[in-house]
Amino acid sequence: MREIAEDLPSVRLAVCVDRNALAGRGRGIFFVPAEGVSAQDVNEMARSGRGLVAAAMTAERAFTLGLMPLAQARSDSRVRYLVSVEAVACAETGISASERALTLRTLAAHSTTAVELVSPGHIMPSIVATRIGPESELQELAFHAASAHGNALAIAWCDILDDAGDVASAPWCEALAVKLGLVLLVRRGDALVEAAMLDRSMTDPVIRVGVGGLDLGQFA
Image (cartoon, rainbow, N blue to C red; front, side):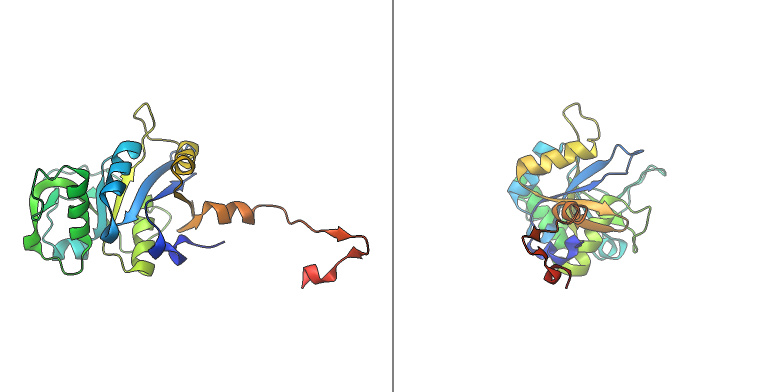
């Protein structure tokens, strides 16, 4: 099996699925390294994902950018959100796909300083744990893969909801990835694996027998 981390720098918008989440129902997210996120990516997340388009980064990065914690945050929330932000460079309302993409790229740029962001805004930053483990959320796995192999300082991500507005199941998310022609990643423990590679690894091997019997070269 191959982890997505090997190919992550070349990946655009992708769907990441945890098939065992929510008592086996599963769930999924969209994600993309924020440094190269486009207006099209943001529009697809908002249109097809229906969830909140957010950013994910380390607490150290958030501190560097002067991002503030929410005054009243749910103690049981699985996501640690910060106060919403907007790039100072946004020229209009900040809500358009192009300006939300601009804010996300600003959060991810190595040269960004705190004075280039204002609050409130239309992007919710979230904090990821320093280390990943069995309890890590999908966006945390996605961030650490992007960070470790693509030097990403932030990712853009969005929960995927179904047509009824509920958290979409794993099969729903997988079908959506196929429909949109996006890379599909499946959680395996603490790793993200390309679904195509995973499916091939679970396929029984085919041993061809010629007229002369088995070819021992197949077992080399």
